[in-house]
Image 1 (cartoon, rainbow, N blue to C red):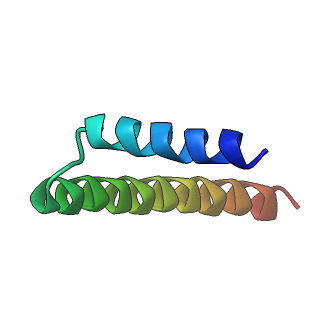
Image 2: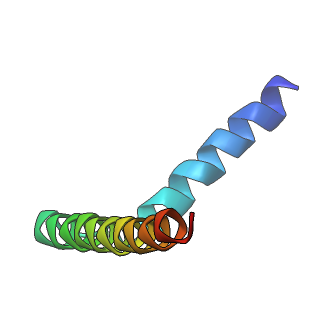
Image 3: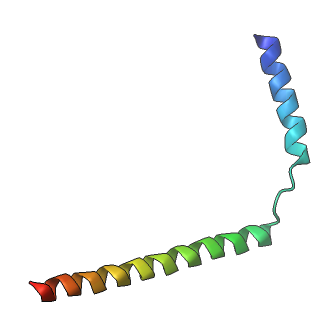
Length: 60
């Protein structure tokens, strides 16, 4: 059991060295894109909610 765990950890370290990690600037850019898209989708859905609410309230 201990031998399998040691082998797994050793292989995991080898694989992690092969990963192409993003630079700090890329991480900042990707984060900004995600936040921007989240805000845009939130505004869009909020707008739809407002329009449908107005339609329902006027039909009552």
